[in-house]
Image 1 (tube, rainbow, N blue to C red):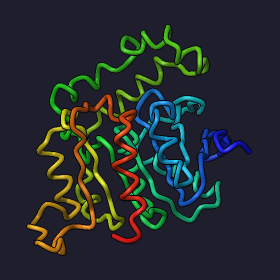
Image 2: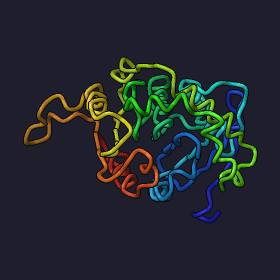
Image 3: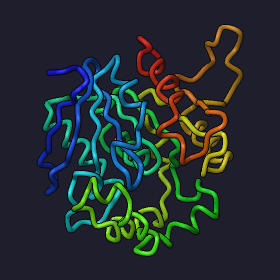
Image 4: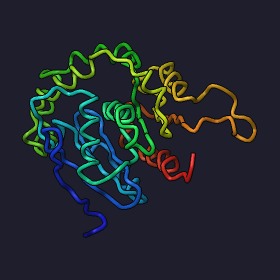
Amino acid sequence: MDAGVPRTGYAPVNGLELYYEIHGSGEPLVLVHGGVVGIAMWGPNLPALAESRQVIAVELQGHGRTRDVDRPLSYEALADDVAALLDHLGLARADVMGLSLGGGVALQFAIRHPDRLRRLVLVSAVFSHDGWYPEVQASFPQLGPDAAAPLWQSPLAQQFPHVDWDRLFTKIGALQSADYDWSAGVAGITAPTLLVFADADAIRPEHIVEFYRLLGGGRRDAGLDGSGRSVNRLAVLPGRTHYAMSAAPELAATVAPFLDAPSL
């Protein structure tokens, strides 16, 4: 097979036919996209990451080529879908990287399936609903048919003609509007974790700091030899917003060294 042509398939998991693509070879890395767009949102970062590992890019329930089913979107169920995909592929564990909505899925994967996780990368994600700026929180209940209207006339509608954009936006709005606080679960994560945010993210800076502190970071001076440093990492990409993170080429350049480090 051409190295540039991914292997694609549909995994029968939890009542879904979950679409996935496999790019490259090496240590497996599952990529979990943010809301609405699907795999395409990763832009140049997917091939960059696939240069040194086996990237398994998934499209979540109702997104892209994965058809919706009569089930609300929940972070817990979507995380279980990812775990079932690993079973389908015969993988005992993998690195998992998620962005925004997909970051919530990846975080729940870490909490619910810790034995399946090698390393975790969370990009522009929160551990509680109040991590978003108030104006972002206020926008979530507005997601519905009116917000979806432009998508019906977009190139995405031609690429994915079976997607019901009204239904998808309504389900995402319900998911994102729900209150939650996973701080206890975050504090229990043992897999090495990298947090990545934009310097103009949709997430409050105070929440970013607290997220890192929950993981054991930012609690003391690392010392001249770095021995006091947490195994977990925090990165802030300059000149980026929440909505430009997935296609920012420096994202892969930030993530790859963390995933490739022989030990943390």
